[in-house]
Length: 209
Ligand SMILES: [Fe+2]
Image (tube, rainbow, N blue to C red; front, side):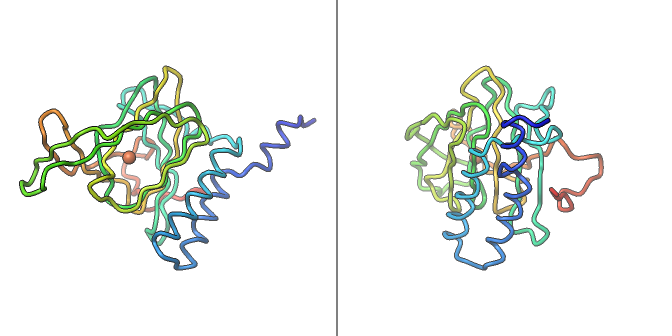
């Protein structure tokens, strides 16, 4: 017997439908701005539908600062989808992305801090930052960033002790980020890992279907 809730979830807009729709958007060969706008629409639908995240992607790594589970890599490398699982008050470094990104909060509440860069970028590895502002992002909230400018530097934090899940779609492989230490005024590009891949698994071959 199915309950109304079961019936709803059975038809809810889920990760599989999202990956299908984002693939279709890129197949239309639109402008970058239009791609990101449409991906953000699909992301909002995904994080407001009530569809659960598959358990394997919602599992939290026991020791990671926050968990990055790779869900899907587009076969043509146009985008990747990553599920982030956050324990209480876990947070990213202060960072910038290498390309566009669209983020949706699926479960819990995020706190996002935005930074401005105030140096002239003339010294490699150095960066002077100032906090521009911050905002809470409850479940169902989405954020979209076009390729980084000086104003895309940010930090994301799980705002509560409860687990948070967010779904991130990037226009790059999701394996590198530009990381800032605002206290020391330094900046470097770092490699980032996924926590759900088998040993020797090639991230590029990861598909969600
Ligand atoms: Fe980010």
